[in-house]
Length: 394
Image (cartoon, rainbow, N blue to C red; front, top):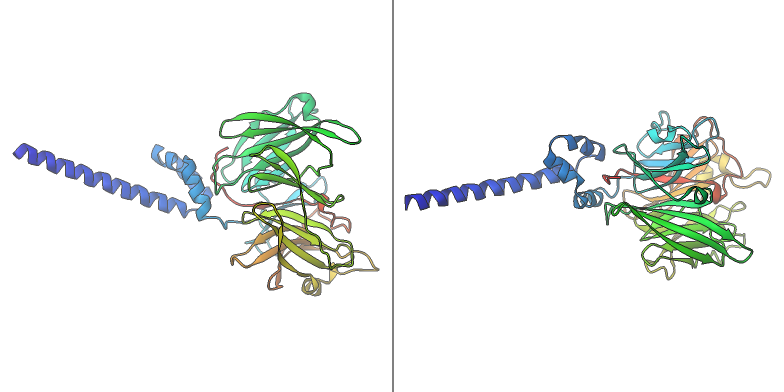
């Protein structure tokens, strides 16, 4: 009897210790979910248990859900050589002392291909053969970088688009999409699309005959597809990763506008695809559309004009019947769900404009080497990417 009693007490103590350990583990995970991503990466070296927790794909997704509004700023192009092409615009800094550029901007001979939800894809001339290009995927938050072996030498010369597909709210893994042109005639274009999966670390390929022109380059990932806009043809096409097909997407118009309208911006924000139509260069009106989840149409999210903004920044105005001086760079949600902010590059700086309440603020001046051009409003010459932190492993 005494031995049974001691066994029972020992079992209870073990169960209590196990429960305490589970409670401590839950508490640890809760604490880690509240830390900035850079601090979390530093804690990986504490123990094998901590490393296992932080590297768990489920933890990576849960962290993204907890910190879904972690937008810190933007990377914009527009600087001229010998300065780096891109520069950083912070949402948390001030105009007198702009935040430092991320380290990757100053990588020698870097060409940024795409940035998606905290992951960066860039290319450089190969160190042993300047006619060959090396491609890398990088997590700027952790500093992890991986060289991706892609395509053969001949295909490498005809790359049309390199895009990232990554949704940290659904998965800790990413896809890299390479589009290469194999042949072209007056009526058709034969392309090859390669998809690299970080989960399987393997490639899959498909061939596609296109009877229409697609504006490959600077793709936008949203809801399992890559979207490309063709401004001169006033069209949008997409590649559905699950269905493995390329389709044209019907896009909305500004039917009541007497001036010619065009695609001023196409991008993702808050898990939704947005398209902004403008009347550049002769008008300051705009309409923001949001695509329906099933791609069957578009909803008008907001419409208005930049009259208040021109009043605050007169250099945006027209001179001698020239174009209005502004360039739509990005669209993003604010702290409040109803806020919808537009990022614009104007002569002398970068400004944030709230399309709902028509308020604005200057985020920074244009850096050295960045000169505003009246032709820079063309959508296809502008590149901008949202900067957030992610725990994804490369």
